[in-house]
Amino acid sequence: MSDRPWGGPAPTTLHRVSELPGGGTVRPITRWGEPVMHRVLRPVQTFDDELAALVADLVATMRAADGVGLAANQIGVDRAVFVFDCPDKDRVRHAGVVCNPRLVLPQGDDRTLDEGDEGCLSMPGAFVPCARTDHARVEGVDQTGVQVAYEGEGLVARCLQHETDHVFGTVFGDRVNAKQRKELRRQAAELADLFPPDWPVTPERALDDAG
Ligand SMILES: [Zn+2]
Image 1 (tube, rainbow, N blue to C red):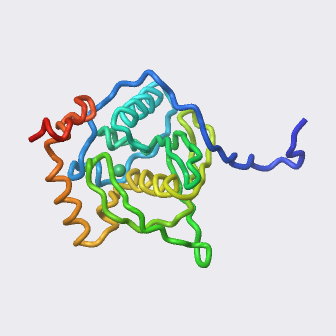
Image 2: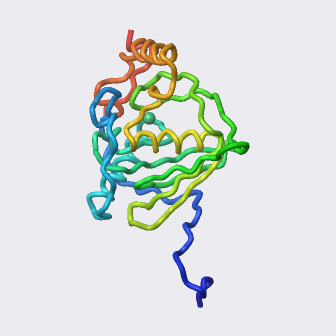
Image 3: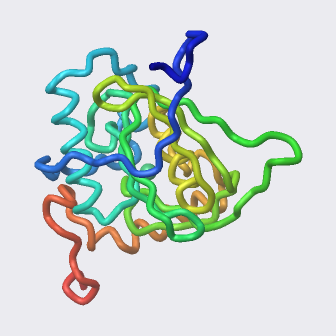
């Protein structure tokens, strides 16, 4: 028995928490300035073991870095996919894998900006305010090729916009003014000793060890 007796394309199901694969390898996080961070990533077309391994590595690396989202170029891979595991404004967890993401943002009167701080694992330790819509929806497919959609408000809305930006070669430093960009560079330089070049393979150093 079908709930769509008239046929037509299946609606994209809205998900909140999808199981994230384990067993991945922690890989060094690519920093801003590397070319792969600043170009549109190649769409995922093959949903094979190589993609599954990439997604598992993204999850392992995101967790090791204590992040809420990570895109493939952040571990140096030119493929349009990101993972996220992030609370919303009510601290409800959202998590999933999105290949070939498309963002759907509120328009007109429904559009409210959140001016909260934003940071990026590819610019570790630096945070400045970045205006984002407070609600976001992303649609795409998971690592098996099944259509998925996620949406939410608060931090998860910021995260879905930030990670989709990465897939299109945009870092949040591209979305703030020159003064804030300078402030990002200042903070990152000040904290550079805390993050080894292969971080998070080598963990973050404690503030008093770094001198
Ligand atoms: Zn980022």
